[in-house]
Image (cartoon, rainbow, N blue to C red):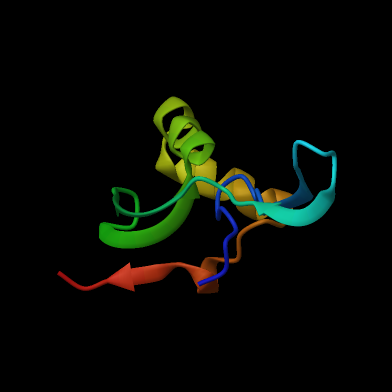
Length: 87
């Protein structure tokens, strides 16, 4: 599982750990990711997405279908990458 949000496209960033003596070593700032199950009403099925906290807010604001279409339009999401759950 890659650490990329499927809605917003957020990825880990790199930066520095800075000690008290100002020595710098590389570190990673990971994304606040959740594996979340959503019910997609338009397709009448359950899907599993890796979304960040910002992605959850986007889905709450726009709706799942609009957020998925916007992510596909921006080139962040490919519909074949969506995991469909059979229930």
